[in-house]
Amino acid sequence: MRQSLSFFSSPVFFFLVILFLGKVDADIVNETCQKASQGDKGTLQYDFCVEALRQDPKSHNADLPELGIISANLVKDNATKIGSLIEELLNDRKSDPNLKGCLQDCKLHYSVVERNAKTAIESFESKNYKEANTAVGAALTDAWTCEEAFQESGLKSLLIAEYNSFHQLGLIALDISYMLL
Image (cartoon, rainbow, N blue to C red; front, top):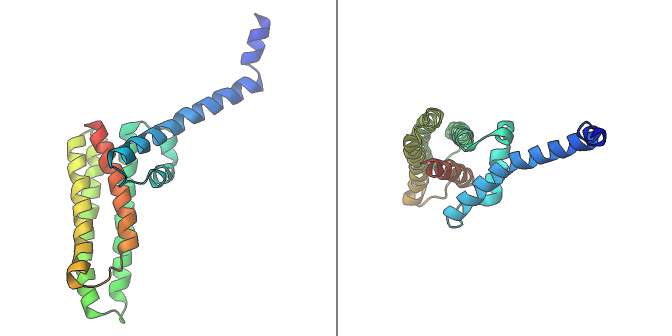
């Protein structure tokens, strides 16, 4: 009996417990991203999903609803960053006037994206997953509408790399909301 008690108080035991807990914590992110990337038939990139969610230290101890909040915050933060980039591009005096027209459209769309992302966060927090799903879907649609403005004008998008990252983040939040419905 005494020998088994000494094992439970040994550094090896504590190391194993920490190792196990770390693996359990990481599994929710891995499992969520695996399900999401499989559910999107290859549209959502698994590695992107894992890396994005793990940016937030809270993801290590999160459950699925908390991952929903984290993902919606990533969407909002990314939309805000894109909105700032649009402002910079609009203030560039050398920009083509046609590009500025598209950028003005995008500025409007990304302000709506930010509002939808805030709604998604609030909806995840209040466990209204249907509303979170709707808000994230609307955010993705508005971001795509920005890209369409460039396409319809026959211009190369100045925001395509940012849009691609935003789209991935949006898919994460959307897929998590589906999992919670």
